[in-house]
Length: 506
Image 1 (cartoon, rainbow, N blue to C red):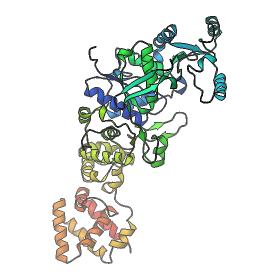
Image 2 (cartoon, rainbow, N blue to C red):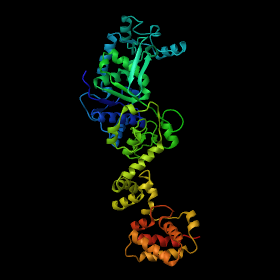
Image 3 (cartoon, one colour):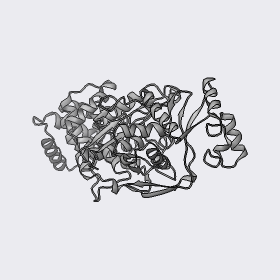
Image 4 (tube, rainbow, N blue to C red):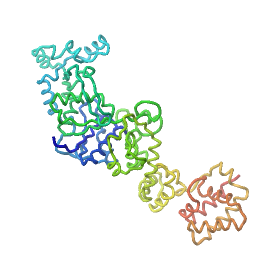
């Protein structure tokens, strides 16, 4: 058989905000497709109409637009294997439901929820399978005439796969190796429901993957238990030769303790678990997102890529092109990956350092505007260059660098107590006069003249410089003081020193 061109899919359900774990799954599919010159497809699995949430699909599309991960085919793009919404493929699925029924590989079951619940109470660990199906109300125990009559009367039914007992089902997983399951532990899963005339996930998934010519199914570990059933469905439909390779990714685990990462962990520890901010249309509750929290998309991609996969070396900062070049499913861990959100902040800090001052300024300008601060972009870019080493997020610039845009209204009490001496007002008045008379107000010339004056006057350098910073900034923080005053300009710097002399009293 000729080697097929790689085709992978990301197939979320529009049932709410896309979890960050889902984003990682999509990223791994994207990297795999790009490395192999294949196609990355978006399919929306919306067969469960009861769980549909308005806005969820748009949220998914916006997430990947923000991250810069483009789909080659699917929802929002189009292609030759559509439609790409499962809800638009009803007739396609029905054809294969009928095929399985005609070939005796599936059967119709009329058991009501009440009847099933009664069986569960009657039989410990009840499952609908070869050992129990003949005691239930289905087309295997009812006559063809009775089945026809019930359907004509409008009785609701489901179609179940008929799993033969006593078989070894082998799943060849790229990450986990050969996984063997005995068919006797599998139940006759529901494949189709007459109530909404739609298939369940299991059948729709297999039919779509086959017809869309998917070559590799890369998905979360939570889907591993369903893999044996999917293997059996491929066999039942006669598609075993075109069955995709499976790769079940490790779970994302809580940052602390055991178990799968959840939204509650983010709420509890103060970090986002969604890529974008999400407002739940049902509860009205708003959840934070990585974008709105100030993460750069490149940082999020790099961070997620290394959660459960390693490049085979010690390199941590990897561009998207480098990730594509190095990505190998064989290097994915079998065990879960702890979600180290502090490491996520570290990645964001690193990527901020790689941004040009102008790029940071363009991201910071809206933050300033929101606070009613007007400043020329050139000045904001200079501030960004002085301050970006000190921040993990663009939004932190507002607090870290506010003194560049707004004069202090108050002064740090601890610093006043420690640094504001009896002679400080007199010394700072002298300093203000010195600065006022400088024709060259560059940082270099200020430093030379001020330090020369301190030395010639016999003053203590620390006392003058600490009080100088306090008067200009209001706190003992910020970059080199002369870089600050050079950017503020002579008039503003002198004005702040004189104001501090008037305001601060000990």
